[in-house]
Length: 396
Image 1 (spheres, rainbow, N blue to C red):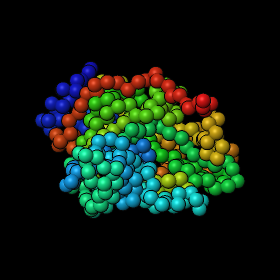
Image 2 (cartoon, rainbow, N blue to C red):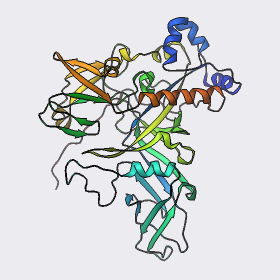
Image 3 (cartoon, rainbow, N blue to C red):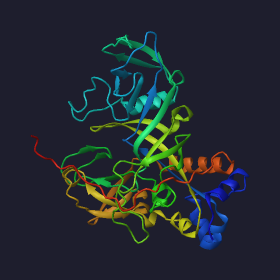
Image 4 (cartoon, rainbow, N blue to C red):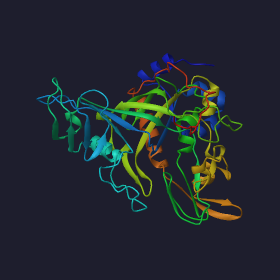
C-alpha cells in the first residue's frame, strides 16, 4: 500500500483527508493496527516550541527621500547587519542591545535583544530605526531616524539557519558552583537537569531518516506558511541511533523561512537567558504525509522510546570531551524527576510541550479545512553527513 503527495493533496482539497496529531496517532495505530491505519490516515502533524538561537529575519525598509545606503543601523538600539543592499538589513535573534553590559557584572540579565525585537515586530509595535551611511552620489543621505512597524516594511522575512534540532542534550552541572547556559541555570552538584524537546511530537523525531521532511517541505512557522529552504547549519545525520532509527544525540536540523506579516506573536517570543544571552522561542509545525506503513510506524514513536544524552555543562560540554554521563527517555524526563547514582534529580524543560500540542492541533485543523496543502521535497536532507569541528591553527 502506498499513496502519493498528489493523492493526499486531493483528499485535503476535498475535505476528506484523515489527519491526526503525532500524539493521537499512537493510540489510533494501537487500536486499528499498522496496515489498516496506514490505509486510513493521510497526514500526521508534528510540532515543537522552544528557543531556537539560530534565527533571524531580513527586513526591507524601502527608500527615503533622499535615498540612503545604510551602512550601520539599530532597531530599538539592537544592531542589525547591513552588509547587503542599500535598505535591506538582517536582524539576528541573539544580537544584544547597544550598551547592554552583557556579562560584565556576572551573571548578566540580557533583558532585550534581537529575539525581543522580532517578537515586537510580529506583534505590530512601533519601533525606532536609526541608520548611518558614508554617503554616495546615488545615496546621498548620511543619517536617518524614524519610527516604523511591520506594515511599513516592504518585506519582513524570517530566515532561520538552524531550527528544529533532531534531539538534543540533557544538561547538568557536576561542579560545586552554579553555571548559566542556553539550557538555563544549572545548580551545583547535579541538583537539576534541563532539556529542550517536544519528544514524541517533535518533527524530525517522527521522521528520523528524513523521508518526508526535506528542502521544499511546507511548514507552519509561527502561524505563517513557510518552507524548509535548506538543511540547517550543523545538520548531522551520521550519528548514533537507537533500534528504532531515532538519533540518541543531536542530529538533523532545518533552515526555515516564512513571511513575518502572517505570523502570530504567541508563537514568536523573545527570551532572556541569565548569564548567557538573548534568543528567540519559536513555534514550528510540520505535516508528515503517510505515504506508506513504514512512515506511519515511525510517527508512532513514544516518549518512552526516545532517549537523550546527559552532558556535564561545567566541563564536558565546554571542553568538548564527548563524555556522556547517562541516558534517559523523554518519558522519564517529562515526569520531572530522574534517578542518577541513587540520587533523585529534578528535571525541567525549557521548551513548551503544551504549546507544541496546540500547534499540532492548529496545523491539523488547517489541513482538515483544506487550508494547508503538502509540498513534496525537491531535495532530501543528507543522512550520512557528519559534522566537523573548528581546528585552531597558527596564523601566518
